[in-house]
Image (cartoon, helix red, strand yellow):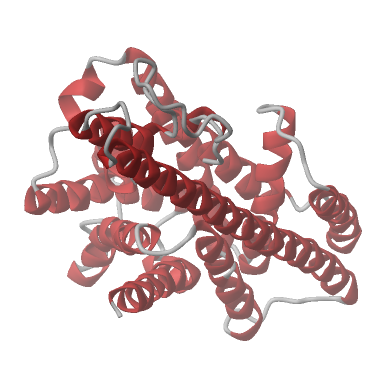
Length: 369
């Protein structure tokens, strides 16, 4: 019952996280006439403020001192902060300039980019279905290029920047909340300096467009932190395969918003390109589910074999104990019991014992793990 409740809670967190990310295109237009760069700077500044409040409530500070003593990790965090800044900035600009559908395409393509990075940079081996999905994705980009009359650079920038961000974060090793705190800490001073510069020039909209507008700009930080917290709640309760399935919620919401709310055009060439992308994602999902099912089956089989071996060892241990208890057996009862205990634990009779049992049992190192 507890496991089922945990799964339901995890799904609720997951839907909340990806649902909020999917609804982001509704928020950024509310900040007009503020430009994309100023919105980005406010997002950086107020995200740090939101994260600090959360860390204060949770009292999660112990990671900061060890991190400050590791220049290499700090350099990686600076790189991650730079890459995610590009991602955030392009996304905000894309949404507010009428390219919501293309922005959604970027996050549909992102899993394919991550796979390509794994092959090219991490020398990972792909299964045939994954190679097929990547090939279909390349064809999809070619079709979309024809449909748009140019490379879909917004989508590609979002996909490659977020893929690079994920790659860098693999080497940082911080949880989501701590990682966001470290990254926005890197972003804070440049962003604050830019906002002060805008204010000095009289170009800032923060104090000139009313209290409601100022509160919406402050809200950038909290809408950044909220889905991340929900994602953390989902990640600890759900298997990775479920998280992988949920990630398509956000770009699907964005795609629907682009069509229904923002009334963006979708000629037949774009539909063809999107259909190919969805086909590639379907192949990836099918392959991931099949691989996960196979892995679970292999683990169950290994556990069953390990249980059979343990039962044989226990039987041999009992036999040793009984042999030591019989009159004239040559092994005192206490020694037999000790030998039985060691045999039950290791699968081998003790070297100094008089009884040679379990010689045909596999050694612990040979058992399935």
